[in-house]
Length: 352
Ligand code: NAI
Ligand code: MG
Image (cartoon, rainbow, N blue to C red; front, top):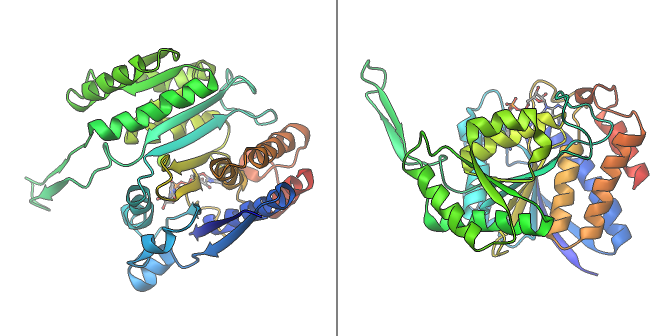
């Protein structure tokens, strides 16, 4: 029997509440589909350990993960730890160290979930944001001068490389070809006059190599507005690190709740493990109450199964999510219900 070695990093807050449900779902489908998942849990990689020991993870953290087949992460973040510390102390080193240059964020409006947007109908909104995940606007290059003085200034450089842009855009074109769909590139070349025209040129070059895929580019501000007004017109959206981050949270909200949205951080070459995590954070406002929506983590686990080559098992999980939402009124409070995380998880396991 195939065994996949999975690293579980629950993190902080509701991250620790949504990973156990994801694991129960994984155990249920793996048994049925005849493969094994062996877990190593990294409970103390978190803001709590940063507050105790001054580090989000040990110095050899990446080495501990390197031989795993995949990483499933809850969320990191704590009110007493600045967000850039938790992000740059754990998530970003893993994304960059393991060349997880594709951040894949599927968005669907499920039957039975009310979108806050009138025009977002179930079955019609089904899109994927492909976000560049290792460079772009999230860069360490820059600095601050004259701290505290009236002359204080901050400079931050965005970094776009031919290799970095081409590989993620190529991936997005390939995905659009597989889905038989269109591709939209988010740009802002009217305002950002160096990096964005470069991005546009590289998108056009990739597009020429994919004559089967119809594509267009839109300025990110107009694209954001249209995502609200006409979400069904989009299928694959490719965007830089910052634009993709913002657009995917927006699209997740259009779909009804950020608690459902999943993400995959992919190293498509499989030289390194890929990482799967819900889009949401540690939600300190509801942490510890047992009411977090586990669907984002469960759907992320399904993306992991898909990456590991278990498409049928992954399909079982997404079908169970869709069926639960369409045929029952079991809901966590973020979706307008009263179910606990535990009760919601039991309902999914019943369907599986
Ligand atoms: P958040 O996603 O944690 O919460 C935003 C709002 O959505 C809150 O009202 C929360 O209660 C609700 N929410 C989120 N996930 C939910 C779920 N599964 N079920 C029900 N309700 C849910 O974002 P926020 O408040 O901006 O950040 C909180 C902390 O999380 C910060 O420290 C932030 O840096 C961190 N964070 C970490 C991420 C990660 O680890 N990938 C991603 C985003 C934020
Ligand atoms: Mg975000």
